[in-house]
Image (cartoon, rainbow, N blue to C red; front, side, top):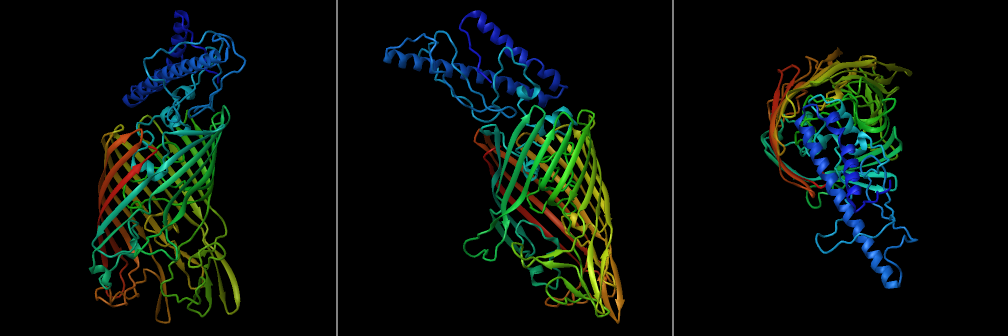
Length: 619
């Protein structure tokens, strides 16, 4: 786009102002909707556009003056048309590509002493200024990326994540600065994280709650408090985005942190945690057909959203603990997703084909080897998976899977709130060998659920409710309860599962977020007895006799349910062009209940205090 020639006469200035007003005029009609937050955004956009126009005018005047002086020094004329057009490349905003201003004809303006010469604004909400014959679009004026634009067009009084909030950070929020490599826009995100916790039990998982490992009274860890702090959840993300045509956009997104451990990782000297892949996917969005495609590793489509079915708008608790919350539905995995929206982005329908996995509980079954084989009661064995080879972890058993998980979701964004219904089908698969005869087994696991966000006070106080229930889907909850155990013939025996969360989140002002949540996940049981031996999950004949005696190993303690209560707050005490610095604290109490066996039904608990500091340079 060419920068217009700014005339120094009165008629030229009047035409320029008229052009700018005509470009900005339609914005209140599209965005107002009696929404104070939208009005604030418009005012900031108008102010920034005015500042940018003045900065560019000053810059062009200064460059013309320099050219005139240079030509005068060489013996040329200062007012000639010139045969060498000046070209300057700068940021082109969020929606359109870069622009190239070209020196126009006419006398060079003179910048006499006065204000310092401005510089083109790189990044942020920098948009090209339209010429008189341009037809500015809503996107080019407002300068919002597609996910934000959709959210505002279908305003449900919940709104998209504010980029500085922890919920947005968990979902993969991007910053407001935009850089350009030719026609490709580069947007960065992430933060530097320094978190710590104090807990009344020794659980060696850091700020990631692994509820399955909370010790019972028979473990010395039950009687030991623990402090742990690290920076391993510092995060970096990048999105590359290109506009193929006015209606078609392609983007790639990658997000990493240092949450993984290597064989040499230790807490004694270097604390050298290693990078891991959180998300990596590409998207294709067609605004004319209202179709949205995603392929790669991302949050499962079962994860609740805030608006529509839009990547990086997942509705996740603001907790410090990296395991999020007991009962939260989530997973990050490979998928192929197709979504269509209707009724001006208010009704959404999506289907996703996602990478499968099955968590088996093998209580009572002895391992035939260390490669996913378990001895059956009749002397045969069941093969439920294989240890990783090649570039996969040799200590991780990868379950046998015959087909991907299939997930469907409907989302509705009326004027008030966000509502979802969803379902999933999963196909656990294994093989058994009895008396030299092998047989494959496939079960059909399923689940159904939904979520809602109720903006009690729009953009200030909201209530979030989520739930998912079914059979064989325990791994979609934060607690990672088992999906299945084994039948006498080695076939998968699906376990019923249910999980739910409820939360209240307050944003009293732009600096503070306060939250409180309850989460719960529970599992059913499936078992049988053979030859006086108890097999399966939750078997009442399993022994819990030693669960109350320190040092005893006679404690089966199959988990029946896990509950968590938590409250916390975040305070953004520094915010500016250099980013955001925030501090947070969280109190959490978790309780683990077990299925009764011989000796009773033991229970345990965990109390934690989290502290965290984050610097977000791009938000």
